[in-house]
Length: 283
Ligand code: C2E
Ligand code: MG
Ligand code: MG
Ligand code: MG
Image 1 (cartoon, rainbow, N blue to C red):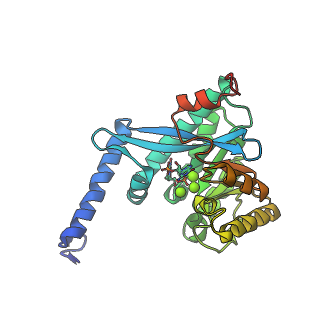
Image 2 (tube, rainbow, N blue to C red):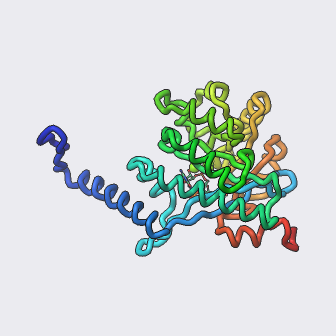
Image 3 (cartoon, protein in one colour):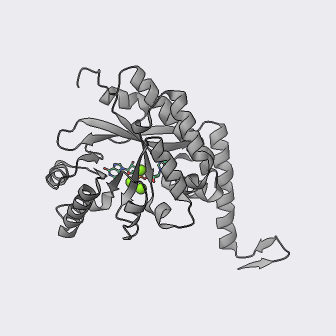
């Protein structure tokens, strides 16, 4: 119930709507502040070879420690950042933070040379023509090869014909970066994009993993994803693996990689290193 008062001005009368708009504006300003005040940090969660439990990579996940509100989960602010466009700068911060950490771990022998780091990239970032240039520059700056980086995309990017994803994905792929579809299975069933775009893998959404041993349908879905991925030569990571029985069912179905609380929650770099360093005594 907004009423136009002039060419560009809109006055919002509905108090609920006004409150909602105000909340988004406040959040946007708080996100800018967060960047300036360095309130963001990265957490890392291991991605393992399912059959052996050996570490193969990690996903970098952003965390926001608000000085007053405390920890704000990404699902509560990423959509706002996306809408307001500040995700471009936050995303840049994530890419640099993640690659810098990877370079440090490599140099100190914490991770093997074929260890990869997964980074989430939002649709708005992919539409930014600067993204590929920045990724290329960051790879160069931190001395990391593209193949050590996995970019996680949402299905919506590839279904939206106006997203301009074609060019960005091809360029990223030329840099050697792996491109995986996050939360696979939750979006659309139009699978043609897997052929159309240079995607290298999928991450099976945790809702399907949670249903293993509960809903027979979920097992069939995982089986179908594995078969399709084998045919298309795509890598498969199962998300949200929380117990041994899920691990063995997934492994039995032919899923190669897993991620979830069974092996570890997302933690800061120091804790990650303590738990997963190649050079530590417990490895
Ligand atoms: P996602 O990319 O699908 O990340 C996986 C989410 O599942 C993470 O939530 C992770 O903490 C959670 N998770 C991992 N293992 C388990 C498990 O065994 N059980 C359960 N229940 N959950 C598990 P988180 O960290 O809250 O992130 C939520 C979403 O926010 C991410 O989903 C991603 O879409 C977005 N996000 C996080 N970091 C970034 C970022 O740096 N950039 C962008 N654009 N989005 C991000
Ligand atoms: Mg992800
Ligand atoms: Mg996911
Ligand atoms: Mg998700």
